[in-house]
Amino acid sequence: MLDPYKIRKDFPILKRKINNHPLIYFNNAATSQKPRQVIDAIKDFYENHNENVHRAVHTLSQEASELYESAHEAVASFINASGMEEVVFVRGTTEAINLVAYAWGLRSLKEDDEVVLSLMEHHSNIVPWEIVSKINGFKIKYADVNSDGTLNYESFEKVLSKRTKIVCLSHVSNVTGIINDVKRVARTAHEHGALMLVDGAQSVPHMPVNVKDLDADFVAFSGHKMLGPMGIGVLYGKREVLEELEPFQGGGEMIREVSFDKRTKRCSITWNVLPWKFEAGTPNVGGAVGLMEAVRYLKRIGMNNVKEHEERLTEYALPRMQDCCKELEIYGTKDTSIKCGIIPFGVNGLSSHDVALFLDNYGIMIRSGFHCAQPLHEVFKLSSSARASFYIYNTREEIDTFVEVLKEISQI
Amino acid sequence: MASLDDYVARVEGTCGKEKDVIVVFKYEKKEEAIQKILGKATVKKSIAGIVFELTFRSHSFRLYGSGKAILRGLENKDELNALLSALLL
Image 1: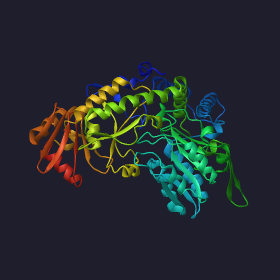
Image 2 (image 1 turned 45 degrees about the vertical axis):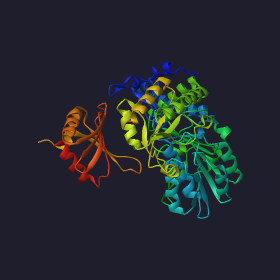
Image 3 (image 1 turned 180 degrees about the vertical axis):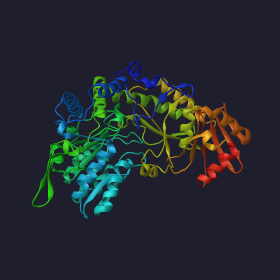
Image 4 (image 1 turned 135 degrees about the vertical axis):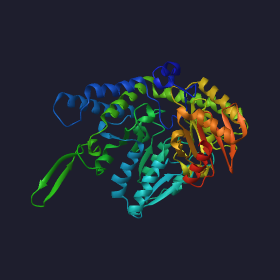
């Protein structure tokens, strides 16, 4: 079991006051705060080891390259990948999904092919596929979501066919916190000969994720939601699948050789080995170092403890929120056995932004709006929602304060 | 001569179907902005000096003690600027 009071000491930002109230940060589904260890690791990289990687033979470059490769290895171990060649560093989940949509989808998908998504997806797992489908004409099918926000597995299985080439699904909904059985969906996808992409943006930071156990072909996630810095994220891909893919972007680092052929007057190019084949240009080495430290920090705590802590906070918050005022409505299932620490809610008669601004007066940070998941809000028939989301440094006392402030909202 | 830039730090369209506008006043000017607005608009409701539900001309909006206001039903930026100018300048 983790000790949030001890953990809080590692997070400098949590000492802040906002509008004369101690900061209560309940917007962890958007981004997490950063512990001193991560901030120090990034600072140490820029103060002592800063250099480009895989470019030079001198000491600094060797140090930077070793740190960068160690970061890949740390992430591979964290998600139980076979090795660092299965871990591609990108800017975040969005770029990871775009990589697959362009490097694989754009080249491989034909007019009769189908991509299967669900209506609970974040826009980053919808828009890249819609863009690429407009280029080469493949079809997109959306599986339904039940009225409680859970995935309609029957609908999912119905839309799968021999034409399905990839299934792309959130592991955890960023709106409801509902955990999808992606292992079951991956099995079904593979039975139909399709690939499986898991959007792990809301799962990898909050629960143990074992990519071998999930048997997904791709898993995308972001560093900044798991204590790491912004601008670094991961595309996990099965080695044999990544080997088959052409590169996403071209440039330095991702090539082994570029030679000018005098006969054809063209350059012939051979790709670098994995994962560098997908990492064109100078990478975000400082970000990778920060992510490595974040992974170490989470490993020390233990991902089972992270999950258990968030479950307990959610179990504590749900009935208190429900009882605090009759105008408050919690959206989606309240079954904490299939839910992470994300609670979407609304207050009748108020927009979600009014709720967020009211809480802001008390130093409580939550998200309001669509949370980049407009289709799911249309399923719920909502114009927007407020969302509280928890992490390792949140406490029951913070939830008590949050609930007390929610009680006051009913007076508006 | 004072301008809206003296008071307004940011204007943000909200995410969601509502298409509201949130005006964030400059930290060092927020108290002055709040007092000016309270002096001109009609207070329909106030909760502990934290939230003010206001009407001004044909507009109703909420003003928060943290120095933010949420405005609804505005057609465009010109209408927003005219409203803010009438309230602040």
